[in-house]
Structures are given as C-alpha cells and as structure tokens.
Length: 577
Image (cartoon, rainbow, N blue to C red; front, top):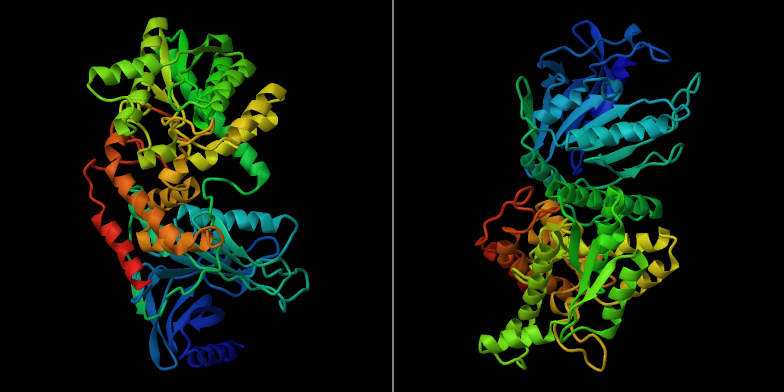
C-alpha cells in the first residue's frame, strides 16, 4: 500500500505538470523507519514538500498511534523518486507571481487541539492554511466544525481551506459527509452540503488579509525554523464566484438585522447616558428637522433618558424652520415629538438669517453656499445657547456617511456636544429607524416614522418648489448606497480604486452603469480627502462598527492629504474603457 501511494503521487504530480494549479494531497509515507500521515504539496509537475501530521489522536473512535508517528520538530529532507524533498511541519509555500499567497498545511486533528500548528504557520507568514481531514460525521459535529474553521481563519487573519473525507470512505463504524469549507477571516465563503458531491470553490481576498495583518500590530511575526519553498502560479482572478454585498453595513437576514439594530440603539443610548451623567446635565437639546438622522438621534435620546429614569418631557427638541423647510418635514418633527412625549419648541430663524446676511453685506436673494450655510450656523447657535440657558447638552444628528463626504456645514450642523449618530452609516440609519417603527407598539410613532422613511434626504436650505422639497442630497453628492459601499472598502479593507470599481460594478450591475459608478467614485475620493479637516475636530460620539472616522480612534489622516494618485488610477480605468 505504501509503495502504491508513492507511485500514485508521482503520477498525479507528472499529470498536473501543465496545469495551473497548486495541489495538496494526503498519503501515508515511511521515513526513518517510522510511518507518517503526510500532506504532499506539488505544482508544475514538481513535488514541493511533505508536511506530516503533528497531533495524532488516540481517543474515542480515533486510534492512529497504532500506525503513525507525530511530526519531527525540525525540517529535514527525504529522498523521493531520486530528488531531495523538504519534510516537516514548518514549510511555507510562497507564490512568486502573487507574493501575498503563502500556503501552509496542517492535518485533521491538528486544528482541533489547543495550540494548532496553523497558529505558528500564520505568524510565519502563511496567508492560506490547507487542512486535509478525515472527520467522521456525528450529530452536531458539522456546526462545531464550521465554528472551528471559521474561528481559526478569523484568529489568524487567513484563508482556511478544509477538505473533508466523503463518499467512498469506510463505513464500518463511521460515516463521512465530505463537509468541505472555505473560510476567510471569520466568514464562510463556501461549503459543500453534507453527503453531497464534495466540491467547494471560491476565491480568497489575499490583499484584504494582508491589509488587516499590517493594521493589527498585535499580529506578531515569527518565522524561526521555517523553510520557504517558492513556486510559480498564474494566480489571476478573471471572475468572482464569491458574493459581493452591495450593502455591506446591512445584514441580509431579517432576524440578524433586527438584533443588529437593537444593539446599535443600545450602544448609542448607553454612550449618551454616560455622557449625561458625567456632565450632570439637566436636559438635552437637539434640532429635529423631520429627517431620518435627527429622528434617530431623538429616538436614541429618548432611550437614554429612559435608561436614566428621566421623563422624556425633559428633552428639548427644537424645530427651526427657514427658507427651505417644507410643511411635511416640519409637521413630522412635531408629530414625532408628540409621539415620544418630548417637549418641542418651534423657533423660526427667517429674520435672524436675513439680519445676519444684511449685517455682513450679503444679498438674501443670492442662492449660494453663504445663503445655505448661514442657516445651518444660525441653527447651531440657537441650540448651543439654549443648552447654556437650560443647563443642557446639544446632541448631534449627523451620520457616518455625511462625515465621510463632509456633507455638513463647518461649525454648523458639523458641531455638537455629543454626536450619537457619528458611527452609523446612512444605509443603516434607515433600517434602525424602521426597526423602531416595527417594534415600538405605538401607532402614532410608527406612522410618523414611516412617513419620515418615505421622505427624500435633503438639507432643506433652498426654498421648496410648489410645496415640494427642491434640494435632494443624493442628486448633489450621489447615491448613499454607492458611497457607503465605497466607504466600507476604502476604510475597512484599504482597497485601491480599481478594485473598488470592479467590486461595485459586480454588486450594482443591475442598478448603475460603469460610467455612473466611476463618476460617483471620483466624487467620493475628492470629497473624502478634501473634507478631512471637518473630521479632525469632530465631536465625541460612540464607535458602532468596524468603520469609524473619529480622529481620536481608528482614523488618523492629515487634513491636507492629496488624492491625486487615487484619482489617477480612476482616470486610467476611464482611458482603458
């Protein structure tokens, strides 16, 4: 049997000489008078190395010690078909054509132990771990196996390819289901069904993995005793079979989404409650426009007050109609306050803005940035002075997407004393508000929130046209679903523009043309770089997810950073197209 296994491996290696593939297969191999359970790695017709199994189980249905020896501590060479081939666990197979692709191997039980060899492999530079396994099937084991493989890929910031024994294995006392798994950084990219055909195919994003390893300074490197074996492979990905999520901030499963929204509300409310306790505030002041962001901020504030045992009537909501305010949004602001039992004040700022413009010698009929921003800054002035007057704290309403695009008036709605929405992207704000509408059990509140959800996003700084909102945010800066997609891939994964364009083209192929995606991606980069100065002095606010732009936390960026090389890559895409 040993001799037949050796011959079969030789045939496999030779037959694959012209195939563009790196393969890992298992076999028993004798060396130094002992028998080892090994994985053979080969590419281009050449056997690159043998990796023996380290942890040999001898409990329950497993009693492999009757045959196999545990791996030796050091790498050596053995003669196989007249060639010296590396033999040992500390082997890293590195692709010269794709430097991010470094493979290491462990076998079956190795993963199920307290200190799997793959931990050291990853610290030595392996970005992909392959595991050849004969894991028999018992009730509940598949769920545990999923958790184990996905968890190891998350812990090691790696791709993990788990190949399980399936049809054709002995059924004397066990059955094998062929449960193959491909995981990446905690996510299951693909798995084969139990007792199915045993195939699982996907792509692993090596650049994203290496980005995360560079980012995490606690991911230490240690390659002592390891031997690197080079190989060549044309590892280009011509198409993707893996799913590209067009709304990466929003869970697809409704139950998961509901739980996520509830968790976000709790985080926001807890952060605000702590700040109110610390500042010994008697009240909270916030501007309520009848839009989504201010509605979420008010809902969060009401939760924080309930958490502190303070009546919601102590919240001071202020609606400040001016030139662009529509009747719909103004009425919704009042209805929302009534439904929550919040005190609401209406303070028109028409005269204040006109006086201000007149005092600085500016015509109040000139519709430009001065006209618009004067309204935003007067509103902030009103809120801040009311907070001082009544011993309160101004709660900010702007969200993460607005921070990314700089869609806020500097020292206007950009400023507050605590920004509860600063970690929530626009695409998720909508779902959090809808979640409250669905679970609140208050018909009046659910009705006004539903109407707010149907209202287009607008700063309402220009006069309405025939009673309708004339200024739509997404017509000016672009669709938030695209910008949130760009934001996620830029900040979370550090992807380059060409990659983001390709992913967006896949995700939004039925919604936007390539030209539209390129147009708004250029807008995103220009605004993201140019508006950093607003983020450099943004107010405190709770971190909600893995993407955050606080200058005191995850995001440190100079305000005068230049985006020329990013835009140049997009121009190259346009030229090629």
